[in-house]
Length: 336
Image 1 (spheres, rainbow, N blue to C red):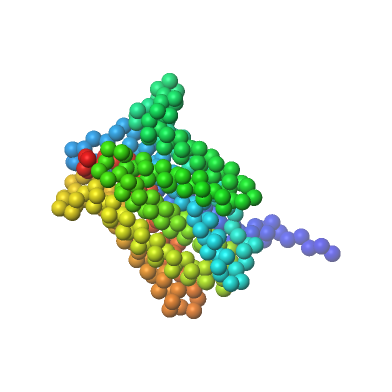
Image 2: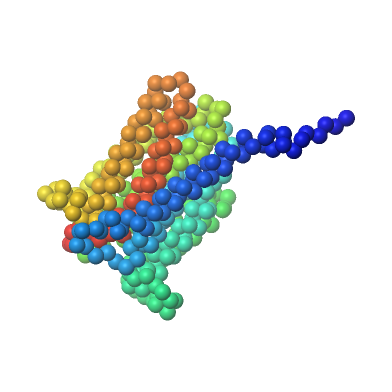
């Protein structure tokens, strides 16, 4: 004889399994909204009472750059975390979370295309297709770099869908190089030094942010496995080196923009300095969370308890990426 359960009982049984997923979805949407508001609304606060004038559409440009940076972090982090997982004894490599690389490449392609359209109109926001000089992109340094980023994200998306997704590191490396060259024009004093610092900074930051995101996704997939704690510990050791490299290159780059004698004044009197100060505060918070996670890895038997501060670290790093997008769109405090 078959027993038919009441509808209310069936709904109650399925409810607890669905509520956490729904809650996580709303939390992710809220975080994305907050991260998007930083570059959109940040320019007004940063430029207030500084006497500086930003380019038209600076909020939209900052948002596009933040999306581009995030799109670079996700696939780089997936490749990095996967290689780390292969060094963990007994890791269930057949149980891996679904890749987000293709979606990230699509988002990066759209952001790079939007930034290329801005370059095609002379660094102004295009209102009509006729405003853009597409052919002119091939005649300028910034135009060529913008096209390189568009094509690189397109190739990265194809690589992510191929049988060898690890090959996407090459087009993603091209994006990092293009960003490093774009941030330091030929008219700048010591452009090669600046580009080298930015390349190391962007690469290490992408490995740090994207790597932590994918490591946490893998640990969640392996929750009942000791390999999850081992992977967290391995990532923490590498992340310490990445953090040191990001900090060193960031400080050096900042001092090149703001000489040591003017740092304190420019941190409060210029839009670039204010945004940089906000970024430094967020990075300091990230460092505290990372230290807390490392302490839990060392002092507790349940190494997976380190996931709690690590998740908060991911959120803070997402805000850092959003602020970085804003920082690249604001006027520089020093004219070379």
